Image 1 (cartoon, helix red, strand yellow):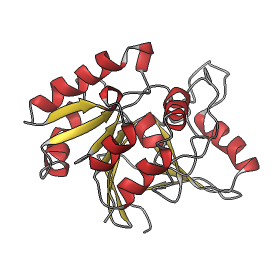
Image 2: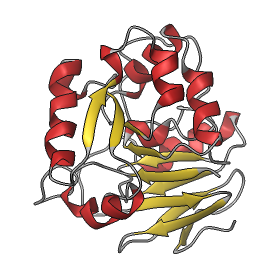
Image 3: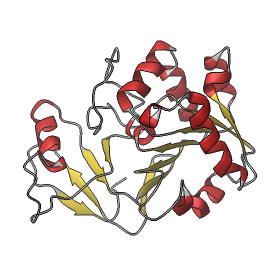
Image 4: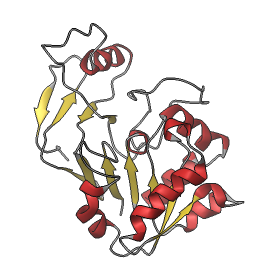
Length: 230
């Protein structure tokens, strides 16, 4: 049975890394002693080792061991044998490119579908969707495909921001960008605000946190949702 925890962000305003998710993570990883960390998104360009250490430091407080996927000679085998998997946020293009270069996108999908718990934050949640095309990130590298894990029947736009009617900024809003996506694609999109996350068991998904999410569907008005239709 598929087990998912997909968070919009690793850190909320005024908090520290993953602190707002602490209770949820204690429950989600209750039967896990070791977590395989996927560090390839490299936020701010930090190294794989540096990123893994950030995750390791937090999870040590929960009594969990963290090992970086980049340290294994056989990443496919490491994914298949993992007790649980956590893909951190950063640049989605860099992350997806690495997963394809290592030829582990498919094995990651298969492993999670067989029941290995999967957690993602930001880019790590973005790749749980059908494609990475609703990322907010700059295309600093060109992956072989935009197709991602397809663990959920929609795409995620993490860090979703509502338009500010008082802002003097004239750039595109998230809603505008998602409308542009729907000119060429049919996949529904969930705008997941910071502090919100999705918890999945089997085919059932629950929206958690204190905020609603925004659902975008092609040729339909966007709407606020407090729960997902499973």
